[in-house]
Amino acid sequence: MSEIKLYAFHTGECDPKKCTSLKLARFKFVKIVRRLTKLPENVLLLNPFAIKSVSKEDKNIIEENGLAVLDCSWNIINCEVFEKTPGEHRALPFLIAANPVNYGRPCKLSSVEALAAALLIIGYIELADKLLNIFKWGPNFKKLNEKYLARYASAETSLQVVAEQNKIIEEMRARSGE
Image (cartoon, rainbow, N blue to C red; front, side, top):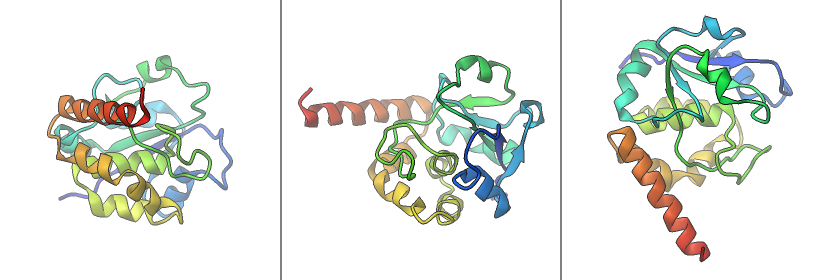
């Protein structure tokens, strides 16, 4: 098992004291890139607009080319930004944020949560734990999403991950009486 290369495209729009990708870089886990063209050509890029979900199918891509996240304001992001971005694009399935800014909100993950989620889904549990453990709230992300992450990690393909996500959402709707 090779060491996974992790990247964060950082636009400098956030509070540096709260920025998870900058803290990961200080701990030498992530390489910060300031221009999209500096990402490796075949990197797996986490993209909320991607058609496919990250799954075990992506393990070889991540091992060979790395895993990248965009650290930018999600209030202004759109799919055009991603169209110009190199790499294999994958979305994350439904997960709940544990970061202090968006705690309890679905799909509002910090960069460290996004990277850790992808790593947990493809089976890099130890590396995901190292990333999360840098933040006092980090381990809570795994605990909060434990059942979901286990279901996604048991899936072999993107289609199976999406099917699990759809079941989870249906179960949530049934519990809430919708």
